[in-house]
Length: 132
Image 1 (tube, rainbow, N blue to C red):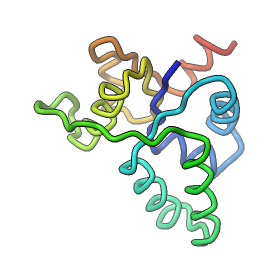
Image 2: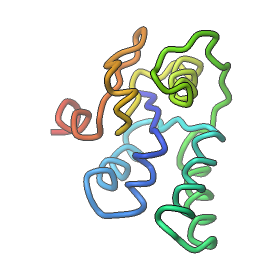
Image 3: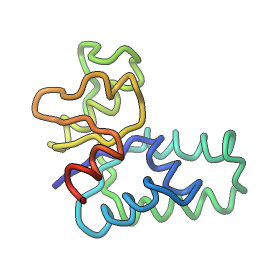
């Protein structure tokens, strides 16, 4: 199954040991993780500014993501779907890549619950529905 991971889930997976880290470990083995250059850029920026990781560590994480995930291009949305237009980038990626699920911690995406045939789930909800 193709699954889009939002940048906040990826950052959490690498910033601390917890649900997102465990989820990421399972997904890289069992599913196809779909991300974009936009997501990689956000992950890099957040790891640098908020998590304050050294540049070397950030580069290693980005390189690892490039190897373990599928980097996809996508067509931008012609209409706004989310309350936050940046989140439309995530939805557009899921639509363009024929992904079935978006995993995110972003409330502006989670409130949608679904877009077309794409489910939008929190890491906890995904874990409970598919992995427990």
